[in-house]
Length: 464
Image (cartoon, rainbow, N blue to C red):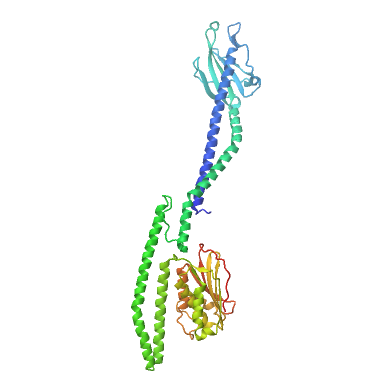
């Protein structure tokens, strides 16, 4: 799975979304938790404030004083993080907890109504941030009906500390949530892209000849794509069929002139014009080979490998049986190493055309032994013809594979045989290669690669 993979892109987006959801969820929960802690602290501070207000009494001189301090021990610890302060007006004097260490809290100018609780933040000792709760407390009539400002505050660092502890407890749960979301993204990508895998599988079936069209059994979003592919296949079949018809018409149009030329060849021989007759016959044979080659290519393109697989051994046996009846074929030792169950993705006529050309080329050079081999390798169909002749140098391989290329100009032939085989192999998505045979001569090998080919079990049979 690479950066160019659609599955990778979908999964990457899903993982990024999962991470974003986990982070946003964690931050949101942490914010809510801190707000909840602050609300709880406000309630506790208000309780301390009410306790503080209940302890305010009048001294003998009529001035307010704190007769009973709050029971919370942190009020007595210097810089302990929990503070109280009572502001007396109009004198401006203040009463404060020992935890303030002599510092005075700078309260805002606005004073809350007597029945209201004022919650705000302010600066505390050593620049700390405090969460404060303030109330206005009216003193009894003997004190002149004066009002005092009573404040209880706590260091907000405690809120952050509680939030960090909550985040530490929340982290494992968020990790599990992120892992579940990533797994969900993976399954979503796998299930969501499964129809594309079905399209690829059916295309492989079309190439392997197991079906002719993709069909419409796809989700609504994939169905237009499958329909367009089927339309392209229809257009291809129509175009190839027209090409076949034109090739057939051309062959039919040349059939009569070729027949006339062969008749003229016989007339020339009867008149003693043997040299001219041989030349005309050679040209006629070349023309016939060209026609057969183009017909074979047109037929191959038309099949589009939509035909079922065909057995290979019977085709090889028919060709060998025919060649045994000619003088040179009688003296050759033939080996057919092809399993009876081996099937080929080639059309029967194309297989005969290719195998016939390879065997014909081997017969020109063999010293007396030709071996025909067919097998299925993982993902490939291989057909080879080996001989025990002199072979060819590596420097001439490209030449003999080219159309009209001949390693020995003194030998009969047109140089089209291997070129025809190469063209047909290429039409089936394969290739022709030649090299040194273990018999000592040339090895010509056709390899058709396709992931849809599966090995067929069977044992090679030897025919001598």
